[in-house]
Length: 281
Image 1 (cartoon, rainbow, N blue to C red):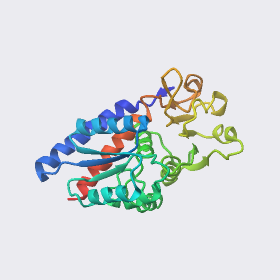
Image 2 (cartoon, rainbow, N blue to C red; image 1 turned 90 degrees about the vertical axis):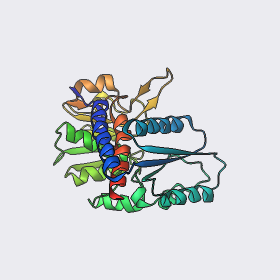
Image 3 (cartoon, one colour; image 1 turned 135 degrees about the horizontal axis):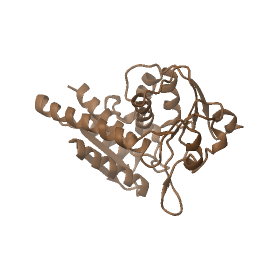
Image 4 (cartoon, one colour; image 1 turned 135 degrees about the vertical axis):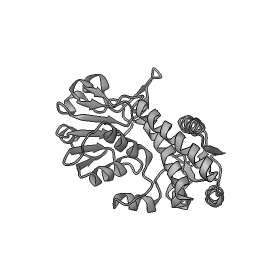
């Protein structure tokens, strides 16, 4: 069993990004800028935003966080996004999800300029990604694809089971794997027999937010398991969606939690923002 070390890979990619930022400053006098919109007081969302701000600082980006009360109207959020769409110093715009119930999330995401949609959630970028065209790709699935690449894991012809069908992770993950010529099965909350699908897969990718969902008897010997789940349990520790201790005994490769996919997600956000800044020249 080999651990896929997302933290080490993320640090390596961030070093490359830092070099590109220095080059962009020297040659074009451009500093990549990321703006984050956060609505309400959700502790997990604020923790993620703080991590993103620190990562921006580390690689030399300009970043700004727009903190808004959960009583804010949809029109006010749209107004702020439109302002950032027009700001030449902002190359990437990210709206931290989830938003309060009175806000139409789809409408908010559609207001973001597709050229600044560094989360890859705008319908324009989703369409381009599905058809295999250059686009901004959602950060978590993109990070997983970079992991496969870094560890020389060939996806062509592999049977891959994606557990979870969210717009943020499951659906884009399946599209990227399909574009890499894998045979993809997507399972979700209404799937009748999850084990029947996961146990015959060469690769299992899971991201549903259910601690320990994937058990030892649900994966075959030598499988590759990518655990996207991040769950804080009663004792305060972070665990994934996979029963790591037991499942890891059967795997050829597996990602740990923490230290697996998580660091790659933030690093892909940085990479997308750099790409947006370079494309804006």
